[in-house]
Image 1 (tube, rainbow, N blue to C red):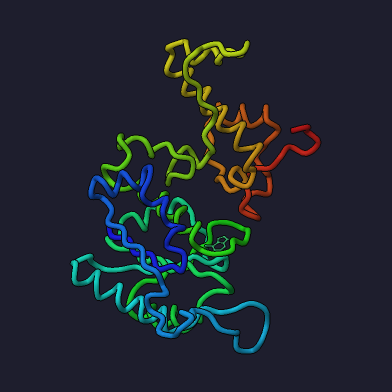
Image 2 (cartoon, rainbow, N blue to C red; image 1 turned 90 degrees about the vertical axis):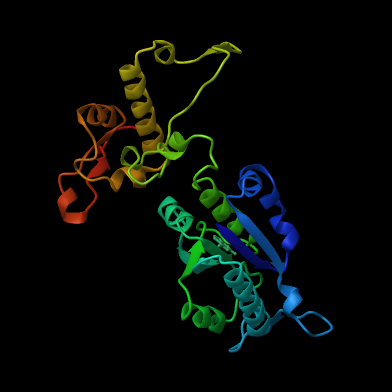
Length: 277
Ligand code: 6GU
C-alpha cells in the first residue's frame, strides 16, 4: 500500500517511522511519502491560507497550493504504478472513522491524506478531486483537534495493522473489539499475564483451570460487563438474536433485559427499570 500525506507540519508525521507502521514500512508492506504543502507556494511568505469569503473567524486553506500538491502527488504515484488512489480528508465534519472504514481502506492500494489546519480547505479542492477518485471525509471522534495530522496517525495505524504480514499473527485481529462480526461487537474484557499473584492481587482462578469452555464463557461475561458499563449504546444496537441463553443470564445479572417494544424503535435491549447498575 502506498500512502501520501500532504501537510504544513511534516514533522508531525514522524511517528510513521516507528512502531507498527515503521515495521510495516521496513517490511515493504507500506510505502509512505510525506510532503510539505509549502513546497507548492510561490510567494515570499509561503502563504497557504486566506480569509474566508462571507466573513467569520479563522482562515481557510487556499486552493492553489493544494491543487498543485495533489496534481504532483498523483503524477508521482501513477508513474510509480501505485494503482487507484483514494483521497482521505480528515475533518471533524466527516463521517465517523470506524473499524469497518479501516477494513475498507486497508483493501485499497493507495491512500492520499490531506490534513488541514485553520478552518479547513477551500471546498473546491475536494469537489475537484472527487470527480477523479473516491473521497472519504473522516472524523475520528466528537471533539475538535487543531488539525488533521493526529487523525492521519490514527487512521494510518488502524489501517496498517490490518495489512497482511504486519501483525505477526493473522488471528490477532479476529477478536478485535469492533472487528466486523466479532462477538456481537462487544468490548474486550480484561487480560492478565504472569505473575499469578501481584501485590496481593490474584488472577481469576478460571484462567488457570485449563477448561477452555469455562474460560471462553468467563471472557464473554467480562465482555458483557465492560460493554454494558462503558458502551451501553453497543448493547442497545444488538438485535433480539445477538445473545444466547448464557448471555441473557449475564445481561440480567447486569441489569439488562429485552425491550418489549424493541421491534417498534429498533433498540431491543434496555436497562431493567428500577435495577441498580
Ligand atoms: Cl479528522 N480533524 C480535526 N481537526 N478534528 C477532529 C477530527 C479531525 N476528528 C475529530 N476531531
